[in-house]
Every structure is written in structure tokens, then in C-alpha cells.
Image (cartoon, rainbow, N blue to C red):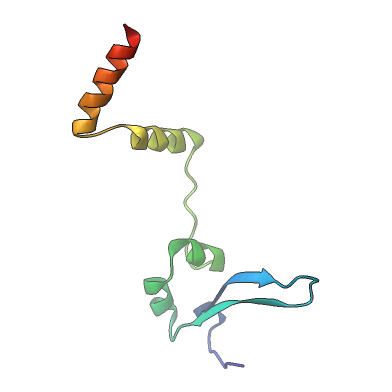
Length: 89
């Protein structure tokens, strides 16, 4: 359908199979250069395509990041501490 110099400039995603099989439909994006693709595509698609190396984090780092995200900041922190103290009485 399209003549492309570099196959890495074509990004296909969002495929759905039709009931019964035999047919799938999805989306595709064709970029002029690999640099354009790297600029506009999400990181997970670049990793899937093999243009960017996936950074493996350890299990402990993932858990620490999750718990940091759960911390309450700002005014809500004072309210949460008050509710916790009230529940312990």
C-alpha cells in the first residue's frame, strides 16, 4: 500500500479481531523519519517497536514508588491524621 524506506517508521496498534476470525482492523501511523516517530510516539510503543530499550526496575523500587504515591500531601494530610487519631481512641 505504502512504500517506506525504513520499516521502523510504521507504527501499528489497536487491532481488534472480527467475530469468527479471518479479519482484523486497527490503526497505523507512518512517519517520515525515525526521529519524528521518537518525538511523537508514546514510550511504550517505541519499546514495542524496539527503538528504545525498556528500563527494568526492581520489585522493591516499584513498591516504594507505589507507597510514595499513596502518601497524602497538603491540607488533607492534617485531616487524615486527625481521623486516624480519632479512630485509635
